Image 1: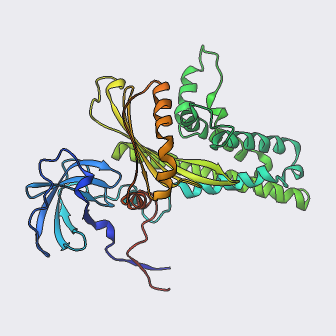
Image 2: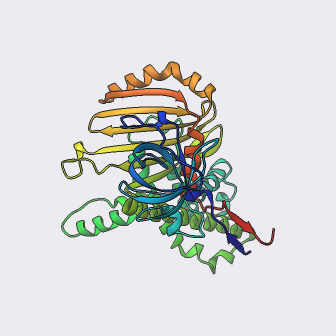
Image 3: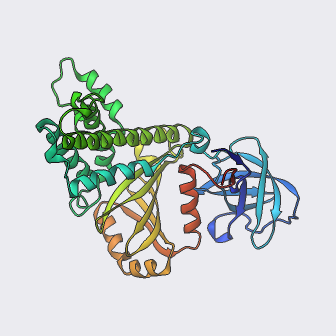
Amino acid sequence: MSKITAPGPGSFLQILPSTEISGARSLQLPELSVGETVEAAIVRQLGAGRFVVQLKDSLIPARSELFFCAGDRVSVAVERLTPDVLLRITGGSAGGSRGILDFFPGNRIGAPSLMNFFVEVSKLSKAPAEAPLLPGPETRSLDSLLSLVRSLIVSRETLADPLFIRNYILNLGILYEKMLFREQKMKEGVVGSAPSRGTLKGLLLEMAGDPDLSEDDLMKGSDETKTGRNTLSRVVNSGLGAIETEQWLNLFLQETEGRCILSIPLLMDGRILMQNLLIRCDKDGEGTGGEERSFHVTLYLDLDVLGKLIADVAMRGDRIGCALRFEEEDGCRLFSPCLEELGERLKTAGYQLDYLSCTRDPMAAGDRDIFKNQLLLHTLGEVNCFA
């Protein structure tokens, strides 16, 4: 199917309300006219897809689906002034990349493939009809797979684990190759367990190498056994592909944008929903000790009662600040009475609380869309010639 790509909305800067920025020396929009071309300098990042931009002599908060670093300069043409100010990017000295989209053109990446894997395994866990049809060794492998996957899903059983995020990264297998390298270094003269064998990727690789799941042996045995082996083989291949996608995505993001993204499965009313966690390490304080560095963590949550919300968390050493932004007023109203309890829990965990807020933010939905567009194949602005 052929497609012709036209300029999409990612090539624009949209001016945000002045309430999005504090500490600026000027919040007044400079005089602009439609069609005028001016230079915009990226001063700093406010969050996912949001920046402080110097436009003429003013500092203005703006939104864009492109990725910029502080110091980048772009030429912009004034597209419109009402109902909002829209600036079309016409060129630049640096930046202006859609991040991962430009590195993996034509591929759909991120949470969907991992979610599909967890959903498939969840179906086997609820009604493992194929398990009794498999020979003994393969049934034991399936049992190990189901047990490991259950430990990776946020549920009533795993919610009490204070180190769940850390264990999720290790047990999923995102660091599988690094752990293998470490094991190789420890082999001579050191007796110890092989941590990579307890990871999901390690288990899936072992299962993929099982001779009984080879293409030739998939067709051996009764029809029921063939069905069981085909199901297991499909799940194994799906899982390996999903984890490797997560690895490549985070490797690229860490090297180019100084951030990483985790897609975490959440069990809710019998359904698997993927929640996204974005971690950005600021360069401020780099090289002066780990406790001096600041981190920004953003959680994109979609919950059954509270609805959609974005939690923006800033951390430096034992200090923490958290701003909860709800897309709907109902979610904000329901959570507000719990804000004091959340603050006490953070203090009990050893944090000094800088700020904690809960608001209904009309910009939250747009910020979520920008985040999703940075991870998925950007199809806006494409014309399907055969539709």
